[in-house]
Image (cartoon, rainbow, N blue to C red; front, top):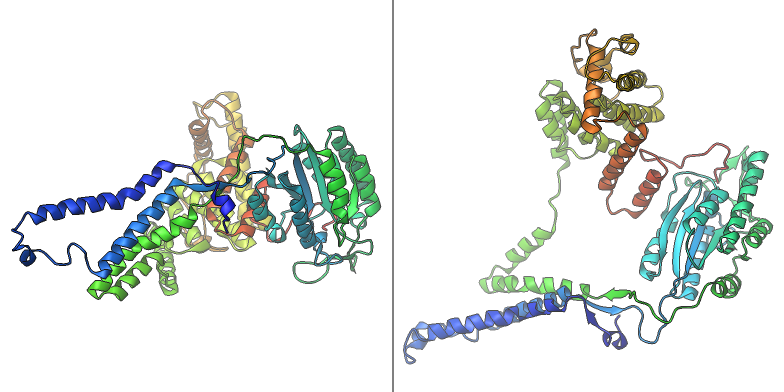
Length: 615
């Protein structure tokens, strides 16, 4: 709710938009002029016989409709003018320039329940207590498991911070494990060059010693101490909040069981002694989580608040609370009132209400229609009517529709469109087999375009999901040979003339292009398509020239830059994946983190790293 003290500080972003509220007055003035002209139509004694008696005052329904219309214009004008109040009311100190970065352990061991209600959930509660003490301190959040990710850049916007913190319990990080040293180094790098900063590390203090080789554990311990010391040298004190107990608890799995190593459940324990040593090296303090506020009295009141500067006397930037939405929705509703009132006068109010409601409701799609479209699409595809097949598959939602449309476009030799559809099919795939199939077809389309670097990457990704696919391995080898041939030709400066060197002969030996680069709807369906007739003697040279032409169109004066190709492909895949996401915050964050770690396609479960305990 908005208090009177806030309303006294009300300001307008664009006050000239308030003139929009005069529209009903202008319209009323025009109506009065019109009635004045009509009044001269007849003598006063005859006027009642030719003028509608209700034209001046109107019926109650007309007056109500006019009042609703006037109020709608006023409210819309208020919304357009942008009413707002400052978040910092008079008498408060302005925002401090200091920054606190929270490094939050989100590894699987944080799901243990030795701390009630649960380690990660308790960390969220503790962060709320911290925010209540921190006032206008700029707070950022970095989460980590196997690898770190910046969840919230440092901000003083309390609403934004709350929004991101609400996602903590549903976050699924791509890589399992607890690589504390890597996370601490990343946090230090994020704060590099920041004046008046501190780092708060919230962790369960489980260093996974039982799941790592002794040498790896020792190396990780040395990196941790070095990272803590580097923070102190950079003037960034390290404060640690331990969320766990020395007795520990078993680490749960998403399926509802317990994580086992060597047939024994993994018990995650807080190593308070080690955390205390790290905090001392980092120039800060350590405290285990407490039921009272003793942890924050030690870490924040006597530590962070004492080390960071007090708020300045002036602040140029103002954070605003926008109030336009309180006028926007009522204004639109009142704008719909006059048509409904006129329909009420005409006796068609129910019909008008149904029509207005229909404008807000989407038309449901029929499963029978979708099934019929897919059946007709497949019949058209098998009969060689590829344009019709692509059109019908375009009406089918999901993976099957995207894959089928891609196959139709491919058979029409529209490889650009086919590449786009297969890329979308990769994102819509619901299993590893579907992803492998879509990636295989994507590689074939890129191959036909002469994009051998892209095809090589797609075939490799397909083999990650289905290593036993023979045709994918065959096409991978062919793409690799052709890419080498193109690079060799560019290196020799012979792009303008054909050649039959040793690389061309290698491409011709044992590599049957036509049949294996045929796209399919499922495993074993290659026989549904007739291979392209290709002259084996002319094929390798034609493919090399196709690759050279592709490079000429994309980078006419340079050779093959594999890193650039990978970056461009990653950007394209990221764009497609973002377009495919609905308003699903857990899925959105999962996808963003997977892209940050370089995973091209969605993961069914977090990946494991060699030598790193998965909790």
